[in-house]
Length: 112
Image (cartoon, rainbow, N blue to C red):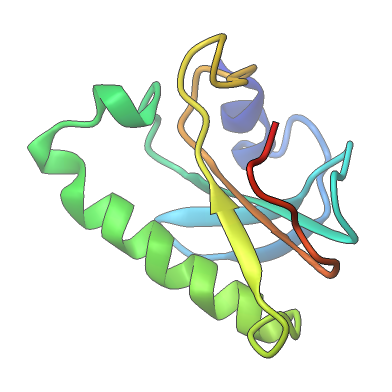
């Protein structure tokens, strides 16, 4: 089981910001911004590049919920960033697709 599967199964505690039948949103334990939430589909998909056509509904739901969580956390006026990592060079550390929601401060570009 991945770290996220263990969190979803409540084997590991997490600060849950949002949850439904499809996704869970948790605060990152090593935040890179004042607001750093991870949105994780409950059905494991290894990474965005491994997503299949049958994952389309889950991925769409994930993005809609990311916007809703951002609004709930007061980020829609100032802005926020969504990030998905793929592979070692992309910064992937857990082989379970997830979306980073970052905000609460100006975020520079390019990231890196």
